[in-house]
Image (cartoon, rainbow, N blue to C red; front, side, top):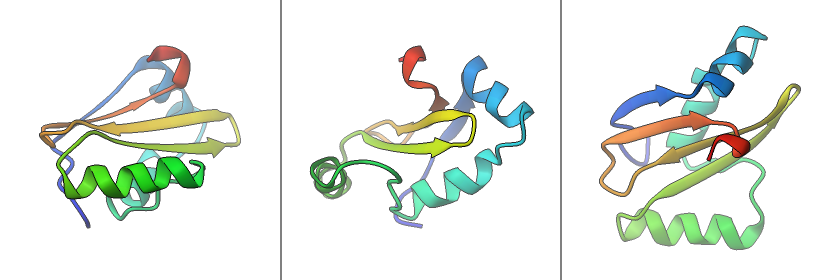
Length: 87
């Protein structure tokens, strides 16, 4: 694990993905280990910079039921599962 998640929360949209069979914990593990998912190379590089400088981290994953975002706040107090349209 590269960083702490803090409190873990999820929006209604993200919870609906879980209800459809998406394993949110699997995606959380990937996020915490620096597998940023389906980000472009520039955004992956930005996450590496953010990791070093205690800034906000974003992962995006294309699931069978839609895109899932995971955002960890800069102070590492909260990690949120959400859909892009809920941002």
